[in-house]
Image 1 (tube, rainbow, N blue to C red):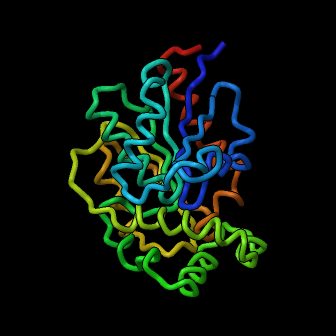
Image 2 (cartoon, rainbow, N blue to C red):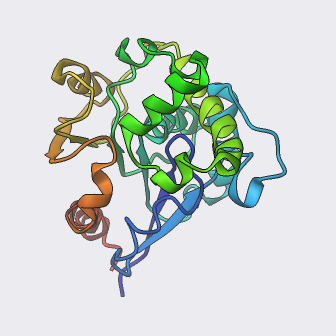
Image 3 (cartoon, one colour):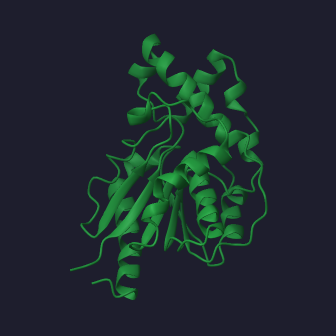
Length: 242
């Protein structure tokens, strides 16, 4: 019987621990999905929101640190979650834990890109901010058209965007692990910005394109699960976890 590999999942801006339920509902049995949730939403609704990326990285680290090294593991993140996956892995490395066997990153340029500071959505007025959210997709129109629902989601989204948009990159040595970077063909990103992920890994990055906008992940669930499963199955066999 194969040893289970843990897949820690870091949600996007405005998300919670249920954000990837539809994406990863068909993971193979040898992968255990562990969703990580930031404060101020979902099961952590009564906690204060975080608007600082170092504090959020530390929060995520505290959630997983006792599970590191028990079994092989990987980390997946989309958009804000991808940036946090990168920073979390450096924190894991700096604290001398075993590293993930793979990072799966989607929906964001490399961390050294200046692209994320261009719009500063979290500072926009209400109309401009909501227009940006509509353009990104991923949030049902019934929420965007519901004033009460917006009163709940808008502060969360603004804080999360602030986390990502105020990030200042610090050069680090490349991580000695492989990355798989997934992006949509219609995302507002230049290829040069996406390719900056290669600077952060000491191994060749696997860049994969899918048709779609920023939330292309929900239109390609089977393909994405297959990519993740194949790569993690490779590590399971290589490490004799059978």
